[in-house]
Image (cartoon, rainbow, N blue to C red):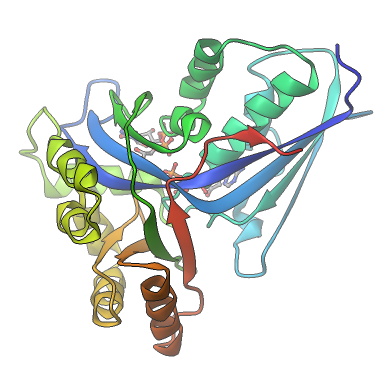
Amino acid sequence: MRDRTSVTVRAAAKINLHLGVGRVREDGFHPLDTVYQAISLYDDVTVSVDDADHLSVAGAAHLDLDEIPTDGSNIAVRALAEAPCDVRHHLRISKEIPVAGGMAGGSADAAAALLAHDRLHGLAQPDDVLLAQAARLGSDVPFSLVGGTARGVGRGELVTPVEDEGSWWWVAVPSAAGLSTPAVYRHFDVLRPDAPAEPASAEPLLAALATGEPLRVARALHNDLQEPAIDLRPELGDLIARGEAEGALRGIVSGSGPTVVFLCDSADGARATAAGLVGAGYAVALTATGPVAGAHVLA
Ligand SMILES: C[C@](O)(CO)[C@H](O)COP(=O)(O)OP(=O)(O)OC[C@H]1O[C@@H](n2ccc(N)nc2=O)[C@H](O)[C@@H]1O
Ligand SMILES: Nc1ncnc2c1ncn2[C@@H]1O[C@H](COP(=O)(O)OP(=O)(O)OP(=O)(O)O)[C@@H](O)[C@H]1O
């Protein structure tokens, strides 16, 4: 064991630039063809050796921290159980990523906890072992380890990095109340009983990304969970229209929602869109850039 008593790992929020969803599988999961991008909203997870296992959570006032379990059901606690050891830990989560917002906040915490625990104890598990642990924890967790821009297939857990030379500007507008991911997938099944078994291909988005042109990417953004999310939360449609009227190239529901993300043409464009949305009464509009790194140790 190394002589460290504490390691902090930073992990980013994700958005789905393309989220093709096929007909539900027998195991209850949906086949996906998705393109993830990690953007510059972060959770930091510190794992320390302690006398007893416990968890503490802190974060900005606008975050719904009460929604986050502090017992063994927290996904970061479950992550530590992937590599059992006799040591007791204090897990500290410092949150910036919206809770139940469709931005993989819990997945980021799980990825960060997996890596922090590995580094704290000098385990140096190979990447494929960490990725397998991540996939057991949740479909989005492997991407939270990898970061950048990446294609995800299977149920989203099979991740391959994608070359992305662009630097993309986003505005993220969270909602006061979260949406349940399984509920949005179930509503997809209700609205799309005839969904093809194969998800819509990510190729058009990947071709747009390769051009480096924000307008081409804006036009190619695609999310099959947007329709069910808006059907459950009609006000998200108004938010998308408002952000586009404020100058964003395109607004789209992030993953299963309810966060809406807007692609903008520049840093100034993102700041202007965010200011316009706050002026229109939306309490929080966060600017962010992508792609950014996956889970990594902070010095
Ligand atoms: C909506 C996305 O965020 C898009 O990246 C993900 O597909 C969700 O990933 P996640 O939150 O890590 O999801 P998991 O924890 O693996 O699964 C939670 C629940 O979401 C549904 N689920 C998830 C992934 C998938 N490909 N099909 C599904 O139907 C299932 O009901 C599952 O029980
Ligand atoms: N560390 C955690 N942070 C946030 N929520 C957690 C955590 N651990 C467990 N949860 C539970 O998971 C639920 C989903 O939270 P999360 O923030 O991961 O949603 P999400 O971003 O919509 O996920 P995804 O985009 O991966 O579908 C929360 O409502 C909460 O009850």
